[in-house]
Amino acid sequence: MQAMRTKALKEKAKDFISFLNKGPSPYHVVEECKTRLRGAGFQELKENYQWDLQPQHKYFVTRNHSSIMAFAVGGAYKAGNGFSIIGAHTDSPCLRVKPRSARSAEGYLQVSVECYGGGIWSTWFDRDLTLAGRVMIKSGEKLEQRLLHIPSPVLRIPHLAIHLQRDVNEKFSPNLQNHLIPILATSVYQELVTTEKPIGDKCSCKKQDERMAPELLCLIAKQVAAEPDTIMDYELCLVDMQPATLGGIYEEFIFSPRLDNLHSCYCALQALITSCEEDGALKDDPNIRIITFYDNEEGPVLKYNSNQRYATTAVTAAILRDIAARVDVPLQELMVRNDSSCGSTIGPILSARLGLRTVDLGGPQLSMHSIREMCCTSSVEQGFTLFQGFFKHFPAVDSQLTLD
Image (tube, rainbow, N blue to C red):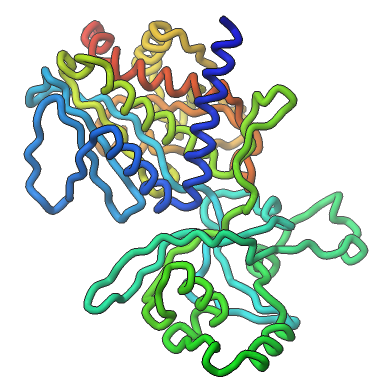
């Protein structure tokens, strides 16, 4: 029996790893979510169209191609009933290419980047890096979005040799403006290649010359099957080339970039899809089941904070404990030390602006906000099971809540 359970955990973890590797940027994450939702019978809606929603039907809608909301209308739903909502975010701390990124210094062609989110930036040194994101193309009279994920390591942020920074093992605090600059090529090699190439093979980059290194622009254009001068703009993330993988002697861990917050995205997505697949699953549900993935961070462990950095209350925690007990998922609790700060989440924002009862929940991780993070394989199955149980049992548990 234990062997069967271990196998199921590994299969779910491997599917999650596939999800991670297909989501190097928020735009790729949303595209993968759309693929999975369509495969499960969800119908895509457009924000500016009039919707004709029907009970026991499933839908999704995107915004900016980086946020997505999917929902299933319960068969017993009527105006005034409730919503069962799970929220997460599609983005992760990373380095992003600046709008004007062309730079050269000390004989190197470089790419200027900006720090996005609260990353552990020292972990980005000495990694094989590439680019992923979206590129806006002028095609005739139309503007088109094309996804980009360069399949080779084109960038690197190197450390200085230890004899040039003798105290590097005692302290390392790079200047984020001057030191965190990826190398693209050497100026010498650029000159050799430019000189030796026949004129017909040269990259002709006019509009973007001052914004991005022509060599990089030409590579991007080739990857998205466009001419360089048709590229109007771009939003690009630096990405670690090393894929997500199972790790540890018993393969009980997942080593990967972007666990925060694709872990919650995956568990919520699969929970919504699976919770709607059972016969009659939506027939008697009085609620609308919703997942909503935002494209900015702030955006299982119950997280408490008296200063309202987290939105968990006794009421919402009690509801979740009841649901967790029904689906046999263990819960941990987290209280931040008094002498330590904590992050924030989408929970307080939603609670304050929409008046939603909210519980802050997350999958435990090590190396959080590093270029590569670490979690347990079991947390994927537990998160999925808990979220599926939430969609199934929340209306019944909520109906028994008495506060008067």
